[in-house]
Length: 115
Image (cartoon, rainbow, N blue to C red; front, side, top):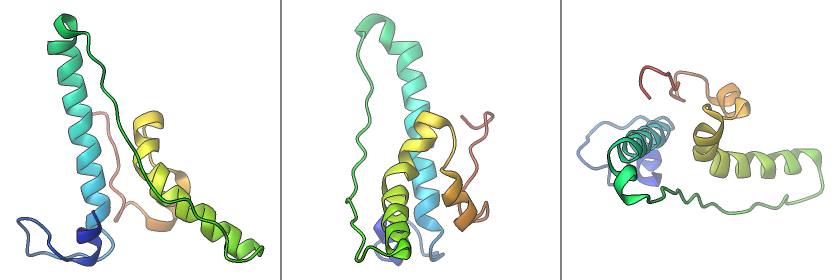
């Protein structure tokens, strides 16, 4: 997803929209995962009894100083890395703080019709 943020090595695209493409990629990734999970549950699980999982990774951040601003920045970094892709899976929507900072123009909205 970093390539989309930086506009480098974006597969099949000559469009570059700074700061929005990585969020669209994350949305598409989650949407595809949801569709495949549903397909597996309805068509293959009855005979295979397998499990579907997800791995979410990120870097933990420590505040540079003990100031409120640094603590908030460290927390926001963790939230953007880890909850960005986890909250939609477990809660059905992005973290409200992300939505407040980025807005609906940058952060796609999940709708029941699409998922």
